[in-house]
Length: 108
Image (cartoon, rainbow, N blue to C red; front, side):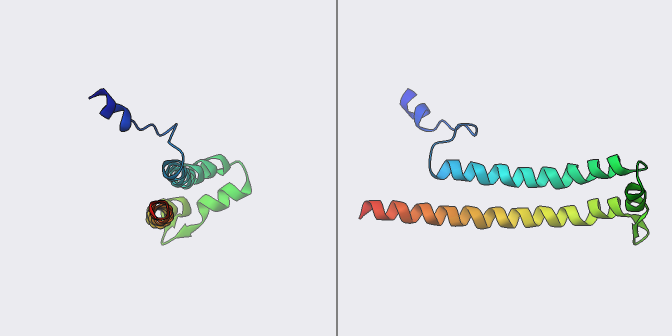
């Protein structure tokens, strides 16, 4: 039983070399892109709001009678999430295909 536990130990911060390391890099890249767009833009608007003419223009700019940052949050961020999910799947599929080809060559 103890041996089974050793085989299936997974740690995201110390992945095994090869497939798992590259997959963790893809996961962290997707999470970083999500975090930057979700929190970074709102933080940027908050910093600029009222402190300069750019902040006033950015929050004064309206699309469909809504301030730009509301429109950005409501419309662009769900599209960004869908784009990130699509790119994540594309890269993981390529990674899986590349590693399965390597595995197939070793059995020949």
